[in-house]
Structure formats: structure tokens, C-alpha cells
Length: 336
Length: 110
Image (cartoon, rainbow over all chains, first blue to last red; front, side):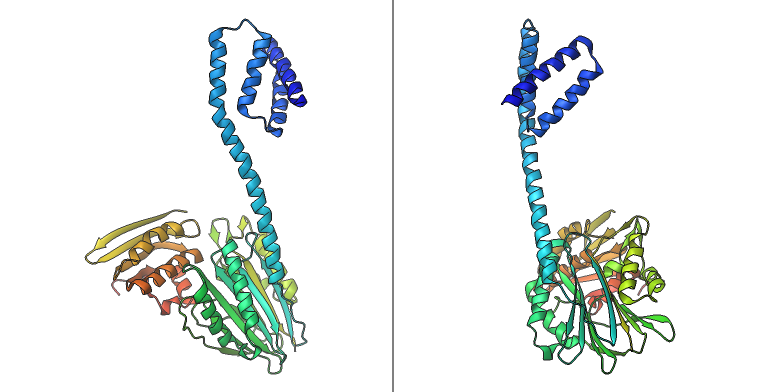
């Protein structure tokens, strides 16, 4: 109440000074006092009221018509005041939602945490960057009792929070499969049934699942409509697409998936990615798969983790780069 | 990024001409038009993609939604004149094997 009183007399002084001399200084003072009003949630009609009081005190002989007009103005300001209060309320609500999402994002991070397996036969690098607060990409490593390494990479379509929630479903479904079922094709077949039963009709998931057997150096894999990866041949120094046919998860409950195999030799590199990598844009221009591969090629000589990070940095530094989709890149290099 | 969607009825069929880019911003407009049409019992819906030069996964989601609706309502959806870039999305996702789609016409009638 006291501050209001002080403000009121300050307002009166500034008003008087301005009416008498129209000086810049009082206008500046008005700007400053408005800031305090806003800070203290003083509503527009209260300011008009302040103005009326100040004016009446300074000039008691004002025209009665003028006084009436000021009261009229006061009334018209009331709706503005209400709109302003609503705006304040929404601002608070928004910051509350923001903090809830950031808590959810942390929960998701914890849930989807995966440890990169350390084995002599394979060097693994990975980077996953969400376009928004929550990641709709998923990747997961599993080290089997038989020594094999399972690598899953998936993209939930639908972005943002619904996609992220769906991701958690995938994670739980995967955790519940017994180890003897952990073959790429049977994993996709089982996941497909779970997804088909549980997702919104416009949502779907693409997934590439690979299993590396360190004893034979073979990579077994199946794809559910996922962006094809690349195989780098250490001898020819050339890249080729890792083609694998298969329907995206969640369309038909009885989809089956073909399992492919690939013999990896020393120095061969397998690159798995999501379409955030091949579909990102620099400004208005699309980055084509070929261009993405050109960028990958520049860093492929580096150790996998470093290469993954440098490739992402390269994209990030492109002019007007704008990450429209979640970006995940996994690089596997056969060491021996 | 603009999209225009024209619906016309030809004989027993509904033809939807789409032009522009289908992405996260424009896909809801496509969904609004297409889903009620394919949800009519026994409907024959043809979607012409001749003038669609870009579609992202959100757009694909709308078409999957439409495809699922046809299975429930015994209706049919066919997507024709897909440009290469858009057609590629269907081949990668394996949808070209379950949905009725035709890539862009080259040099006359196919």
C-alpha cells in the first residue's frame, strides 16, 4: 500500500512537470514508473484512476465534461486489465508446463540410458540429439550371455511428447523379451505386435535391429522400414547402402521380417542412422542422402565416437542449419 | 510452405489433388480432408500426388492413418503420380508393398 502511495505522488509530480514544460526528463520518469507498475501487477484501470486523482488534485477546476470523459476511459480499461491478468496466468502456467516437460525429459533420459558395450572386436560410437526437449529416436545396446552384441536404432513418427512416451513402450517391450528370442527378425516381429495393438493410427515406428557375433564377425540384421544404413568396406574404401526390406512397425499385426547377414572384416564400418540425419535442412535446402554420405566420408577415418561427434558438429555448422527431426548416428568399426 | 487440396467426385470415385509440401504444419489439413472420405463405407479414393514435391514422416502418418481406416470401412485408397523423392519414403518404409501406390508417370500412360 505504501509503495502505491509513493508511486501515486511520484506520478503526480511527473505529470505536473510534464504539463508545465513537456520535458524529456518527465517522459523518461514515466517510462521508469511504468516498469514498476508492471512489476507490481498494477492494472491499466488503476493507472487511469491514478491519473484522474492526480489531475483533480493538481487542477481542481477542470471541466466537468473532461472529468466524465476520464471516468469513461477508466471503464474501457477494465477489460484490458482482465486480459492482462489472463496473460499473466498463462505465463505462469506455461513456465509450469515447461518445467514439467523438463522433468519428463530427465525421466526419459534415465529410462532410455544405455551403456555402450566394450569389446575387443568392435569399437562403437554413438550420438543422439533431440530436435526438441524430448527425443523420439531410440537406440539401445544389449550384450548377450553368448557374447553377442545387439544394437537397436528406432524412430517414432510423431514427434515430441507422444513419440517419447511411445519410446518408453518399446523399451519395456524389449526388456521383457527372453534372451533366446533376441534374434533381429523375431525381435521386430514381437515388437510389431506390441506396437500395432497400442499406437494411435497415425503413429508408426521404424526400427533397424542388428546383432553382431564377435566369434564369426558376422552381423545379422532386420529392418522395419528404417532408413538404410551404410557399410564402409575397408579394402575398397567404398560405401554401400545396407539394404533391408521390411514394413514399418504398427501397420499389420502379422508382418514378418527377413533376416540378412553380412560378414565384417577388419576395418569395415557399419553406420546406422535415423532420417533426422538424412532429412535435416540447411535453410530452405534439403540435405540429400548423398550429401549426408559425403559428410560422413570426411570423418570416417576417425575413431567411431569422435567421428560421430564430428559429423554432428559438421551438420550443426552448416549455414542456417535447423534440426527438424531427432538426429541419431551409430558407428561400428570391426577392430580385429 | 503451402499446401492446396482439391477434392472432386468423378463417377463413383473421389479424386483428391494435393499440391505443395506435406510436413508437420500442413499434414493436419490433409488429415482433415482425407480421413472422412476414406471412412465412408466402400469409398474409392484416389490421391493425386503429381504436385507434391516433399512429404515428411508426419505426412506419411496421415496416409497410414487413412490406409488403416480403409481396412475398417472396406474402402480403398490409391495414391498416384508420386515423385521420386516421395516414392522413396514408401519404398524404405515397405509401404509400397501393402498400399496401392503408383510412381510418377513417365512418357505417357502407364
